[in-house]
Image (tube, rainbow, N blue to C red; front, side, top):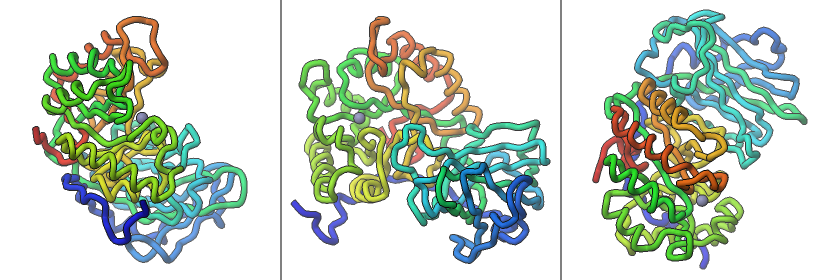
Length: 407
Ligand SMILES: [Zn+2]
């Protein structure tokens, strides 16, 4: 089956609430930026192909360390607002990370870092793309005691890996109001790969506390030993769970979309959509198999779905999302999230910063004898009880994206 020309897949019907971005006019002017201490003057220049104002700040990078530019501007009040930054890589494969700093003085500042994926997966950004990313104060590193209502000191810095120098451009800095839909933040719980314990352990815990999640099944695993049954999936859907798109088979899951040909990818995505439609599972979201994607894979997914979740550690966006094809997640592994306290800290993070946090779970276990992704039932039940007791909204991904419960 070849990809039919001009056929846009299945048009996604879901609503994705988008941020209302307001660019900070003074910061669109690239001229007043000067090299940060330690950065060579030649590394910083004003370039002519900006995304917004016709010009942008270009920073030439090498592996010698972060090079950056900084400036002081009239005070900006970001209370109740998320930060928006527009940047472009000429070679994202060799980016060693970006840092944006906003301070009320040189010593008092918030710092956001956009690192490369620690697992070496394809970069979250593509060459020459103007990425527009929303940053939450929940993710800022705090240096000193910055005043969020009077930010005056700005710095944009980046580093390249070994090899030829590359260029990173800053196109603009702005903000978006934190919308009123989720005054105490929102959390989505997603469950990948059809493990049976998602029904036997997670589902009862969620149901007992009035919570609903997003199931992200590998379709071919259903009704196989140790995996969910079709009847269980149907029961979860009836109870208001979202049944999201992921993979048809173990083979396609392992291959992952970015290693498929465009024809394979089209068939895979169409079959997932067909399966969802045939069962009445109304969804608009997808999760990249293995958490991996590249630009062509993301573009194809967006022909079928309104949003896609990744596991790329470089992603730092918040809600409302500026990049619905790159929803970030916290992949919960027993090795890295063993305690209830860590889950409670995430709830507090979402609440304090009106952030959206998406968790990815795999298996669950009632005993200590468990796999690397299995979470203890007691810990998960404690998490559900704490979520239910908090004022943080808990919604399946599609409802969080839309900014409202639709069940
Ligand atoms: Zn998976």
